[in-house]
Image 1: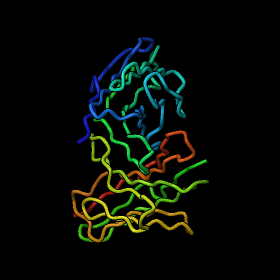
Image 2: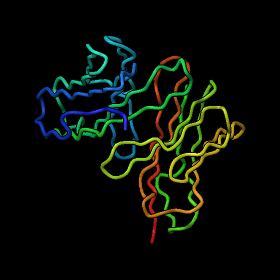
Image 3: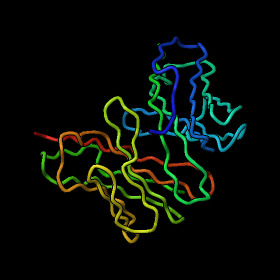
Length: 115
Length: 114
């Protein structure tokens, strides 16, 4: 299994509070991604990173920010959590595409509940 | 822009019978395609990937998929379902236009009946 961990694995918080989720990899992969998974929607991309301090928005980025100060860590922050952000969050990594098709490897997920 | 459509949200099969999970894609470029499996309360695991080297791709646990450009399809099959195959399956296309993104289908939940 690829070395990807997410913390915390479960979190319950209240509306309006800030929340930070952490993704840590030991594979030295260049690309890192944050997704949210909701019933009927599959996985939707929130933000991704293509290098240290290089990030871009995905399709559902409103209300989320990210930071990547080191290759191994990718942080997702909900500045002011809302109930609509209750979801399961997955981190993924992939290697450079110069060598062709590259799959993503996924972390175990973080279940976030916003009350 | 790339997109992927999984034609069935739920599929039920009896144990020992064939499995067919359908996926159609839309891509302006030569696509890279993947199938992932997610067991309940677990992360996603790669089943197989299309690398353009061969149109019939074999994956883990007896699954395979065939890339058909003329039909823009990448259907997942298995000759004989096992109870342990019950899970959710996602078809994914990568954006090879330079954005490093992957686009997910909405998933197909496979139920295997004893």
